[in-house]
Length: 141
Length: 169
Image 1 (cartoon, rainbow over the protein chains, first blue to last red):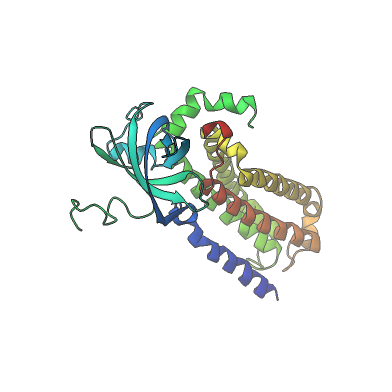
Image 2: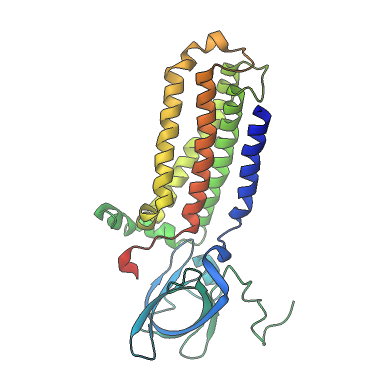
């Protein structure tokens, strides 16, 4: 009996282990719900463990929707060409990403396009971006 | 909404330096998990000895005194690194339901350990060599095992669930 209880206890812990795979994209975001958002930066949260870009998106009917775009860690973003001051308030950006599973106005960012056309990858944790096959100019590995 | 104290804490130089850091935050996170392994790895051995599962021929007091330095060292660094993680992200952590569950469970493990040391463990000389410890000691060991399992799960959930304060939206 005692052996059975402990076997059960450790099996439970082992079963919970895969949940530890870091920052489960699939737990929060839906790879089948890609979104493309054009909006004005209202705030850039340069924070661990994930940065957040806040944008106001104007909808066709004129209303404004507030979105939060999740990026990688500050370290990840720095290595992709960002710094803390890269996104000034008021900058209009286009974000490609994947919407939150719960349907809220949150997305996991794949990449963003700056007004001059320059593109930056957002260090998405989920789709394997930037090597998720969506970029035709990218060399295949 | 979060207390003013936490809103202030989030704006202190140290908190900003931590949550904006390139390396320190992930290192603190790693230290927190590694020292959890050291602490919980040894604590589980003590609990299992009380339950009569491991080290049955070693006196309970010896298992406890030999493992205690490792346990306490792990615990101390784990608490400090955990405190730093809270200091880095105070408001969202405070708003996080899993953080609140974790704090409540931590308080319970403290009470459990305190009761154990102030009651049945006082008479350890009488049952030090018992293959299976008395019921109250076994209960303390079992409670510790289950509370810590849920604390680890709650801690993991904190990292994966963001609770944004309303003014952020």
